[in-house]
Length: 279
Image (tube, rainbow, N blue to C red; front, side, top):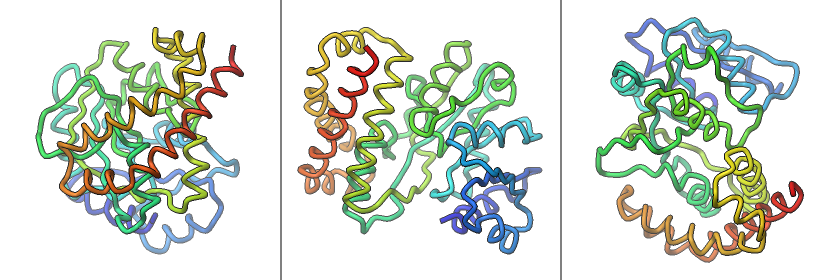
């Protein structure tokens, strides 16, 4: 995956005065692979395993450019990725921009289920309507450097992008979401991994909602059993949003709906447990 990601980013930066930084904390030979295949890439190794938030902060701290772009190692960016983000970042008052996520491993049924539940706010759509009310996903986002003078990604791997997007908006910066800027993502595969990841997403959502502390969260915290009603809201919402998504996405969701419902109830149970522990 990192090889395909590296090739795509190198292609996207052609014609720009850019540096490509890879924060590497896996210790699995990625540094050596990148040094051999992509000498223009600077690897920033860490002896300690980093969360996604920590890794992005480390790269941002080392970066020298005015504009900062983030992508994950399991993604492939389009050739015009940089220029399309810059179109939004160059607007006065805009502090961040981002786009949608599409499926790279389309033959994996479990991968599709993970995708529908994880990226329901970031489906690729056929219309070009921009939004200012959607959070930016860490695998497809860009930022003005000045944003990070007072902010950073939270030290976590799930939900760190949601919390940072909200923090940037609270400082008065514009946050632009363009669903037509699409990055391909290799989703997690295997039904055991699907079950584990649904638990992890539910736990992270519980922690994030406590930090946001909205009215809905306070209601759920008072009556945690209401968490089991969330799938009856989320699953129809996914179907509704897929009406405007890339062709074929809705049909796959309908076929995989029983598995998605199973995963959503696993998510709800983990979410409820997180609420109970934090009371």
